Image 1 (cartoon, one colour):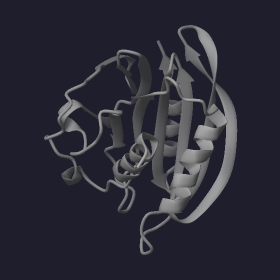
Image 2 (cartoon, one colour; image 1 turned 180 degrees about the horizontal axis):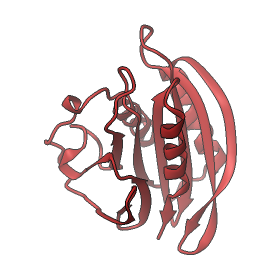
Image 3 (spheres, one colour; image 1 turned 45 degrees about the vertical axis):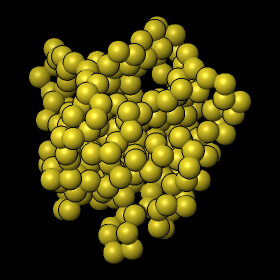
Length: 200
């Protein structure tokens, strides 16, 4: 199994969370960032090489708070503290080295999407969009992909958004999942969070 496949499978495991009980404190890495805020409704999570602004009422899970067995490529996860039926909207940020990698960004996105297509039931691809991510003040091209599906035949379909960007021989993958009938206000917050991602 490739490193990328492991990241994708782990992302899917995190994104299938339905409650706090699935989190464990025995993750081997203790990498953490800092959370700061000048906005009463938002918190900015600062890691060593990126930042992302999330709703203040979302829980931040990094270091020992992450899912047991998560590889160190998963830096941080965020989850809404308001459950929609049986599913909690959530997001995670992964990073891994692309040094020596000869595939293009488009090829990597296709590979990730193919892995989800083979993992999810009733997979529907809603397309890709090229966007810019701020990297130290310089716009850097990224790809935002949207799709839907479910990991189990008896569960409701979920929507997924995934942002992929490369910078300085490192790939960053922001993956989010939420219920297909999620509150529009929550969906708007998710989109704002993705758009806030910046590299240092």
